[in-house]
Image: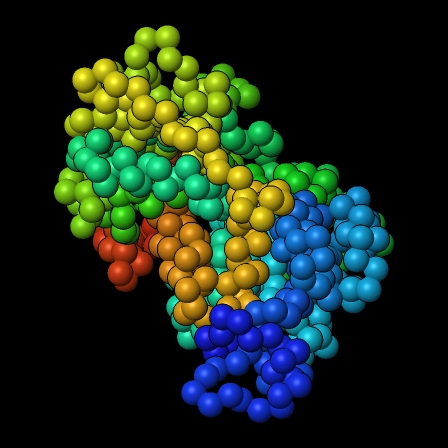
Length: 491
């Protein structure tokens, strides 16, 4: 979907009345004149939502923008969820589907853009199916379930020339621009350390694999929910919410929060691919001296260190330290005594340079700069929208819809804060932490049968360009995944 440059004072009505192009100018024409795949910026965008029983409810409705756009199709595998029923009621004229493939096949001529807010393991297959048909996509964080999928979606967005946005809504927070300005003015100096923490998981992790399988309700198509994941029985321990803690479907605490908080140093410092990663995870003991071993599930807490080379903006190597499970970093030297941690210590970031420190919350909210010489600089409050209307979630979805109308490579598209050119490499770096965690869990029985060795418990060296661990080949199995028969991901 593309359009020519918008003239400053020419309305569609005048163009239609004139019936011809004015000499030397470009005019926006309506969809029915340009044909399939084109839309005038003054028209409404036709949007389809895939997965809206959870976060997708706000993704579809923020994109709908109180009627500024049309919701023409709604797709979810479970029609029994309260938010699914509510969205059906809210958009009674939208066509209803359970299978996104059927929806795209039948409604493809009508749909301009698609929001993808399914469980992590189906993000890539849904988004790729839409992009390959020329549909713009908004995909919830983490962009994908694994590194290889993130690279493929990033390349597909360029190939198909579609407008993309990942659902890390804090990236559209205008207060992030303040942090960029602070760094660019030299107030932090060279940044060498980033400390990030979260109280996630707030769902069960580190527990035995569920065995309490049962028949799903008639509203739920369990096979479609599984998608490319390995087939297992239905259990409430997976759907509708607790799937995040299982590698077959989710990406754990890192997948849930990493794309929100790591977004900030990526933007401020211009980080690229990491070169090294190392991790340590907590153990669960249900028996004396015998830790539980559940490699199918994410751990209850983890500590991850990523090393990034110096960037064009930041002339220093950076060590990014991630902690989840409620473990927060100790107070940095430049954080004055009595100053509170962001968000009461539940989620936050410290970006530490040789001249100053920035502290902020999960979405980049309310950043404060503490300088080495004792200054405290508080970021200005968020500006109000110029149109006087509330823009939920920093206008993250609304800005995407406006960029879709303007077209690929437009000023609006280039102005998006989390198009796949940015969010793809960010997601790859976030998921490096999960690659290290899963490698940490690998074990081999000792020759004498007494215990195990854990060869993945080491610093892993990463070749970002080629998506490969260079010093421990067994770790490379976690770069991608094996898809279930009948499913594939290709451009």
